[in-house]
Image (cartoon, rainbow, N blue to C red; front, top):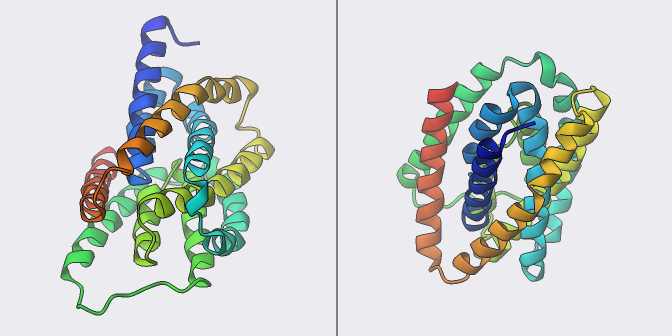
Length: 242
């Protein structure tokens, strides 16, 4: 169990991470995971993160419930559920360093592509979200979270602000529930990890509430710039931490 200093730091960073994720739709895991590793160790950090993210994403769904795109979520779940199960079962043996660095390169290239691409705007179809869900869910089960990987596709579909935050969060809830089932089956989700993740729940909900208040006041262009800045920062972080 963490001492009081570790606990205070984890709670503070959890609030910051949840607020960031409620504004940009992602990035909270990249902020929170290193602190969880420092406090609980690598073995327990990703399962604890998954439980905490499930609560945080669930609260973002509630706060943006009137703007959800249910069809996108359904197609995402179609591909995401089986691949989250597979990724969760492979978690213990995966080469995480190589996957993390590949993800970092991809995120930076996404931002470059958004600015260097031709004027013709690519918009994913609804069925394309089955493939997006499959890839994102598999990597999420291995890396803890890949919100930055999912963001460009939801944005390209035309979702912004509350519609983007809520729809991405509900898709992530489906993914995290499936991952937790897989972690439990693979015996890497002990009860103390579940309790530690649940302990962070109230702080994650408070951060989500604060983030919702912020995002409602942002202009759409500023919102997109914030997402691109977070994508770049997350990509560099993944490259450096490997």
